[in-house]
Length: 262
Ligand code: 6SD
Image 1: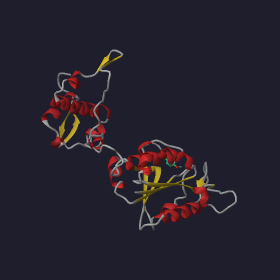
Image 2: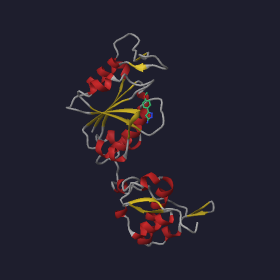
Image 3: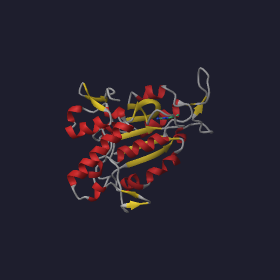
Image 4: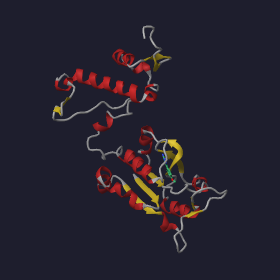
């Protein structure tokens, strides 16, 4: 996969030289280049921003440096152009899987009040433009979102994660949060690991972990629970969720009505 990132703070993306992603680049699995937007300016001061039409606070990124930068990185037919923005669709694991199948991703990191909107309109001509949000909170620019999205996508590329089995059981792969994990020592500062994990009984361990996934999801992410197909849950699953106050309504999990004895 080829990835180009355009930013006025290319040093911010230095983290992509570390760990798994850095190794994937060294191994030739990922061809990632970070570009400084200022290299695509034509004035003495390398100006990338200007005041907003219509007034208001802050500055807006000028369109022409962006057009120059994006034209310089585009080589194939229609690369995906990802523009981090709090006004984008929320990035999900399903999108990470879709993006991992692309040949070429380009990331445009905004700063200040954002990029002149006409850049996105113009880019539609030669890119598949995707404004994406990491979540409902406001960052100062697109760089942190790019770090997150590139890591989420690159780890799905063939050969990047050493043991591909570690990709299978993860959070969101089956719509449930992950089960808790423990390592040695088995007793630490007065806290013991759940005894079932020492039992050697693999069926009991699998049941314990599934129960923990269901309990955690019910208490921390009821929004995820509501998306599950109740038809894919076993009687044992439904019993755990009933204990957490959930019942099947129209084939989905929903909070159970308060019982008459409570
Ligand atoms: C000015 C940006 C780009 C400012 C952002 C993305 C998310 N999820 N929150 N904030 C963001 C992206 C903010 O450029």
